[in-house]
Image 1 (cartoon, rainbow, N blue to C red):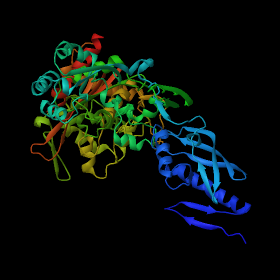
Image 2 (cartoon, helix red, strand yellow):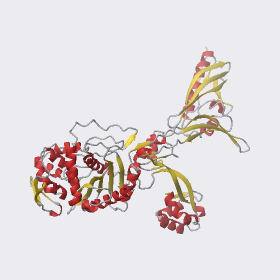
Image 3 (cartoon, rainbow, N blue to C red):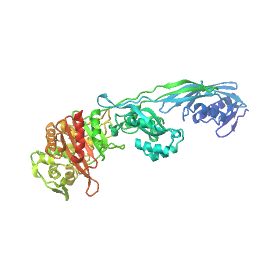
Image 4 (cartoon, rainbow, N blue to C red):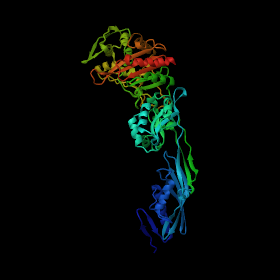
Length: 628
């Protein structure tokens, strides 16, 4: 009887001493499986081989495939043929690269039966038929062309623009301390930290200092060229027209972070440029397209020369644009209006005819948060636009006398007017123009618990939007008590709004009908949440009445700072909202309104009054628009 002996040599190494055809076949299967394990693990140390050692084979495999990255192929055996002491196994080898690209091809492995064991006849051709000694496989990634972010009418907003990477070559710096101090003063960087980074870097390494736009580089170019050790590399980067241009919304593009790399499921590579914030991040996969790939066979001869041929390639697929409703002219005016404002502030502009968002500006620096779209703040007296619609629907006339005392008390809570103003019994339109809180508190007795919620929806706020980017549409819950309804009536209760929401409310008034805002239009946005319950939209007569009240705010009320502003008549509503626990409380400042076909909302995080803090910003914005 023929006996087969199983010999274990090292961990996982299986050798068969065989003496019959059936045993040779079983041993061949085991040898093929051992080869598959070696491929899948990238470890050949336990594979029986002929004419060399497993360690040498493992080193040769690593050298030939290191250019493919940290991946190992999937290998299947299609069939085997055994002739005497020789066996050939047909292989199908598939590499799956980052992003899911698959490179698949056939190969062969040859074995020799020696002393009852199948031994692999090692050759680099096992890995790929064209791979010979000294050759290697290199994976080359070819980034796709990044598409632009577009604005109104297909205008290009974010696209590749010239940039200049300023850095230091440590070995060429004659006086590092003085150089860092000079660059700190010239470029506004931290000189101490820069010097520390340079000292910690290899002498011949480029140490980045700052990346400058062309407009920022031009004034300092001559000085930089005279500084020993300063190196400047010209390049391109997807940028908006200016650094401030809709920065909170459009976001930035830069080198991929570890967090984004890990979350990309191999879509991104460590060398990629990717969206880091805003729409540039949200739509990065669409904008960046699909990277192309190729595998090159590189052969280095003994003279040091190398030859390269491509074994496989997949062409890059260019990205697709993201189109928005932003208007470059309106956005530039909004950015300019916020220039120089030290307190956090936001300005949103909405097209009166369509509801399209024309500008989203945040200053002085958004810091990664879009106050204009996401901020949830008490709207103060700007909410009186919504309250007025609810009151009109309850039969109040703008000529009806409504008392404006210094104080109003509801359920034991006492409210007062700004600066303790007293108007007495005056027509409601005067209360609106002078922004009398106590008049609105008194009039709120006419309202039901859901009236403000429905009035807000009629003006396009407090309901789901499909903007294509996160935004807060406002929150106007039903009032659960008489006290809450009174506080809500002048925007100081449980109601909260974003600057965009208040701009939409003003736009609906100017439009004469309910508007739904649009921002990202391609790709078409997905609706957020279930559709809202239908409510009656604002009627043209109601809108005309409120528009007249808002015009009176500018001609004889709290918004007179805008009277005579170039560009045509302005209609507006001011607002001041208390917040926090300080005594006296801190305040947010608001001003919302419209001029011609542009509705606007301005929010200032810490401002004494709407007219005093937000008014000048609105004025600068409208003047810039009028100037063209």
